[in-house]
Length: 161
Image 1 (cartoon, one colour):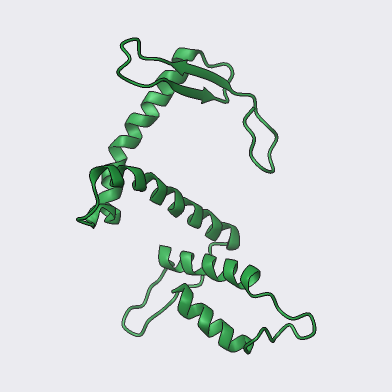
Image 2 (cartoon, rainbow, N blue to C red):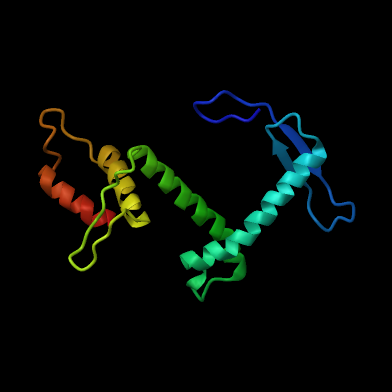
């Protein structure tokens, strides 16, 4: 069963692949489409992997992930999928916070932006998470934490950006 919070569980079909020569480790591939044959599941997984491997170098170059000279090739190979995953999570959280797409855009005197950037989304997600969980308000006076609310907001903006 494939389970995701808030959704009904789905049955899955597993396919175990083994290299008879022993050069490659066994791999388990699965699909939620029970009508697919084992060959189709393997072919789909291979096509997805191939199309992703073509895009990964382009994405890494565009985002500048491989710019640190001290990183080894193995470290880059391990960290790149994680960075893409974190980027995706922040983007999804930002979408959940602002379903209408109106994300607050930080402006500076020398550079005016028309649309929000990833930096704006990340700052907004940080502000939401840190403001609601880390700094609970006093039940007697919700506008006072341990510092005035306006000071806390300015500190939060400075830390989030």
